[in-house]
Image 1 (cartoon, rainbow, N blue to C red):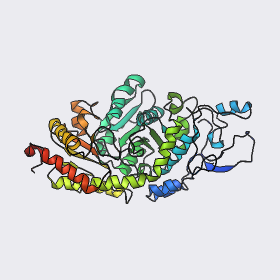
Image 2: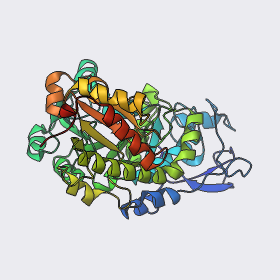
Image 3: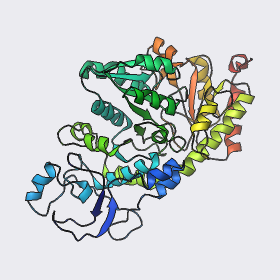
Image 4: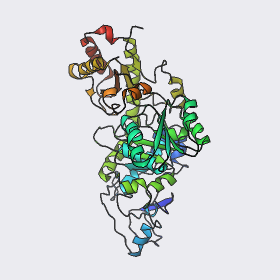
Length: 452
């Protein structure tokens, strides 16, 4: 927001601009001295716990919801000062919930702590977070270098929408080929390097420190989508400038809300909320305060949930491989980036909650998923991830269907790739027996297993 700086502000009492008697002290965003320092020590759960706790209006253990679309001012002249940016949320002055909302701001503090960034602000969806960041950082005629393996919606945004509407073009590269990344950067034109910490759906792990150094040497901003690996990886602590999330996934955990987040420097978040130039302010991807409240109540147990997602994914991947299935999982030692992930990951949180099984063809992939859902109840055929039940989909014909055949081949997405988001309901042995039951129902075992 124009004129707004990170710092101290006070809550629970609407006041005149010159009033120096306030009720309770808190920060607009966590500072690097507290939550971010804890994140640097590789413990996101401790970083979350270090954020100042919000209380309810009457002292309730849960914070209050502020559902108002618009806010009062005590003195008429303060309205002008709010619109010029002289007064803002850092001093508990709110204009309109498309700009800043107190409940959404509270959730945003938690996301900033989670990722160890100076600031964050939450949005109506993950795609709105991504598009708003790119439009804030790139100008007409700008250029993005991006991983060839991205969520289909992000790929479509970069391939079709931004070139048509904004004259912003993208060069897609193999993100593991650092020389190709370097050669794709156009000096004076490239503004962003964009990639996913763990790629959707192939689970390729990006070397965040090296890619960040490479980009920063060229004066490029690094934006990382960390949707697949909250708690597991902390991209901002590894060198990235901006971290985006689809909160709809692991952070929510309930598959019942659509939400996103932008985490980064205070200067960026404030610029995105600027009344005249801010993408979050002017494009209006506003999060509802009631959604923000619900999400804020779920974040305290995110660490516990992620550990169980990851523990089961590791165990199932190991057992599936022993059955002869072609399994892709970064926790397995034969994964190309296993050692890289091990060196970057926050200790104790595992290697991620997703795994892939390559069935070779879409027909065999669909048959496997049919038995897993309809014969044994191991999981559900559905897109998305991070749910407490196992979700599975054939990526090439679903969440990556926006890519054409050549783009899928470049991204390493085979026709029979089944992406599984491993849930944690039931006991592990109960769910594994359901998986084995489905496998036994597969009639063409000679094409099911990898004979190598």
